[in-house]
Amino acid sequence: MEKLSGRQKRISDRAPADWVRFGWQGISCLTPPDWSLGAIGGEYKQGYLRLDDGSRPRLEVRWNKQEADLSRTVDKYLKSLGKPRRGLRLRRNPAIAAKRDVRIVSQRAKPNKRMEGFAWSEGEELHCAGVIWVCKDCGRTVIAQVRSYGKEEAVALAQEVLATLEDHAVEGRISWALYGLESEVPEGYALKSQSLMAGYLELAFLKGKRRLRISRWGLAENMLANTDLKEWFETRLARSKREIRWQAQELGLKDHIGLEITGFTRKIPQQLQRLALTGARRMIGKKAPLPPEGLGKVWYCPESNRIYLVECVQDPETAVLEEVTESIVCH
Image 1 (cartoon, helix red, strand yellow):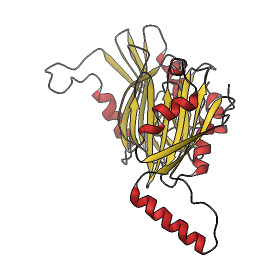
Image 2 (image 1 turned 90 degrees about the vertical axis):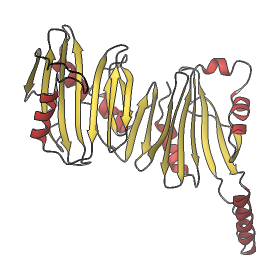
Image 3 (image 1 turned 90 degrees about the horizontal axis):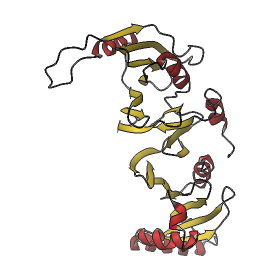
């Protein structure tokens, strides 16, 4: 197991050893290993996510950046429980019983949040417990609840899960963790797009003109069966990136076989500009080469049977590349 950062270690100390981290749009927590992403929507300012245990919802989190009256928000949420969905002519479900002022997360553990815990149940089978809070640091209003079924204790489970819940960057980094990918990205890089498929995961971020991409491929052993990592990268990836011409050099990463990749633009106007700058630098006696358009790291982790890529393009920041690469827990 790789060394955890200070942030990861503090959160991990609050949950069972086999729990895994989930992180999305600044919302992060530790959950049982069989919970995985079931639904996402929205963005950093306002959104929703749900984790399922395969077939049943387990954790739901809603957030927004609007000013909120905590008491009114709690009242509105609890009154909404059991209401029929829009367009359906059904009566309110009378089997739902709700409670306020339930202790889920201690104020001492979250000193910068105004919050209230709650619990509700629907008959004997479904039980929920959660918390609504307003964060003084980031201004987010968060509603988070954990569902339990049958004889499973909802309040106890919610206390364990929601004690690890964070709603903004910690130490200047935001956790992005799902489907076995665990990483931390510096605050200021906003999610631009994502691809969440069974065998391939990609998160693309933007900060001004700078682009950052984190990718992960599964079943790597099959992809590398008749080739090596360098040839796989040059055949499958380097040639497919039209605006950047990539070069790969073998380099050990995280005790694994890895590559250091460097990219140069293919665009003619930018090439001419770079040639002009190179000539000007020679005229004034500067011999230092111009920086590349892209930098990246690629490595194969046999333990997890995955290939990872971190790529920075457009005025890439070496420190960011190293920081993000170091944050990824690959096995």
